[in-house]
Amino acid sequence: MTFQDFNFNEQLFEGVESMGFLNPTPIQAMAIPTIMEGRDLIACAQTGTGKTGAYLLPVLNSISKSNKHHTSALILAPTRELAQQIDQQVEGLAYFTGISSIAVFGGGDGIVYEQQRRGIQNNVNIIVATPGRLIAHLTSGVLKLNHLTHLVLDEADRMLDMGFSDDIMKIISYLPKDRQTLLFSATMPGRIRSLAKAILKDPEQINIAISQPAVGIDQQVYRVHDQQKTPLVQHILKDSAFTSIIIFASRKEIVKSLYKELKGIKIDAMAFHSDLEQKEREEILLKFKNKQLPVIIGTDALSRGIDVEGIDLVINYDVPGDPEDYIHRIGRTARAATTGTAITFVNHRDERKLKNIEKLIEKPIKLMDLPDELATIQATKPESAQGGDAKRKPNRRWGKKKPKQQNTGN
Ligand code: AMP
Image (tube, rainbow, N blue to C red; front, top):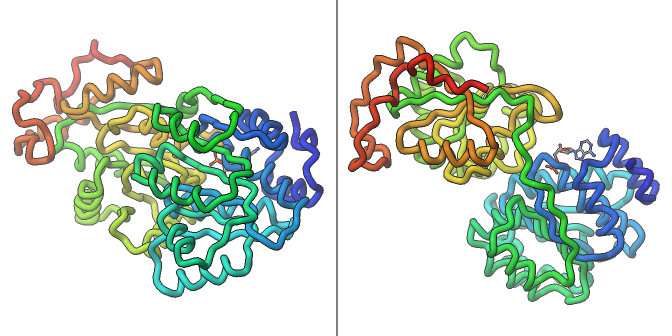
């Protein structure tokens, strides 16, 4: 299948070509014809599959044929970073079509709010928004969505996780009933199905099975105790050929303290978390994307939707609780058929989470030998001091060099 098969408007087709999209990805091949028929859609697909193009292209094609004097499409996304990224794809794909768009998200100062308000008043064709800020514009009466024809919920599962359920329902109460609704979600828990039932009409369902990690990712595990983690980061980064590195931790407190520790040992890293001003977050991301910053440390918020080319190493400073988050995290490397390395630190508390991940990816992850100089570092604090379960006895195997025969290499 090629993009010609969709018979897009010529200006839109030019946009597709200028973005360098040669052939539709599987989710695009499946979703675009359904959306062009005008059907509602519920699609299970993750970042990296081309899901944004899968809904943007048919929506843009539809808007390009319509009267462009009002807001026709609303795309809701969980985070400002994702909203901005979607808006950038709109700008790229719609470049030759004359369709206008704006990203509307919280944070920022009064000037940002004012810019958003003016964009909205100018009847921008597409609004990409986080739910909270959109409600502010709706309730202030500035934003009228009576002519809306398309509603997209992107990363719907994440929006529910972040507590946006009521906000979404409130926003929908402002929309015309006669509209096309498209729901994209990386996972399909019962809550998403209930939401879909409430807001979609006779939807077509598409399921891109939970994608396995790209084959180009060399996945490795180190068994460590907490005191060995930072020295191990230092060991891995020292003299390595890695140039663009993401370190994930599950909580922002860990992100902040790791940032301090790495700074102390002169590793050029920055921490990315929700306590930073939006401008600071944007600057950090831009530096990282432009390869002026080699190491970025963040929580799972960074694992979704962030599309940076050339990341060659992902370190999981701890094991994510949801095995699918592991796939999201390590999927930041080896994008677009390149190769990359994903290293996960596992302490004894995280062993079960590792097992769940191995079950999901249907193979054991290669167990690495701790370097000799780190194997002797003792667990000085009780692990409860770092959020662990003090009642459990530390397993002697953690933080030791593994016996040779335990190598489960793949
Ligand atoms: P997404 O899953 O929407 O976050 O897209 C992941 C990346 O794939 C983005 O950088 C898109 O620009 C890119 N992309 C989307 N569709 C295509 C396509 N058909 N061909 C090549 N790249 C694409």
